[in-house]
Length: 73
Image 1: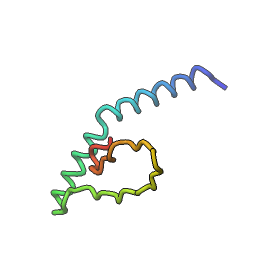
Image 2: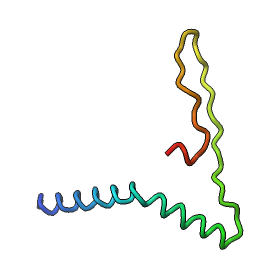
Image 3: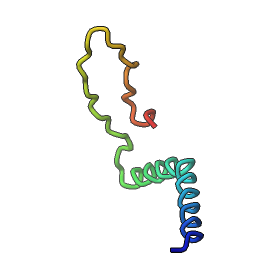
């Protein structure tokens, strides 16, 4: 097993994931909007139905969940 090759591959993978995290989603979202305009389709994200959980007396619940799909990121 060649550890130097494995380390190089892992570093390259990490660099590509960090790069995608920083600007990949924005570019993917822009290209999806362009495709929607070309196909004359609405470019809105569907909202998921929020699950309701039973709350026990005295339970400190977190703030209301964010229902907007783009804000959850």
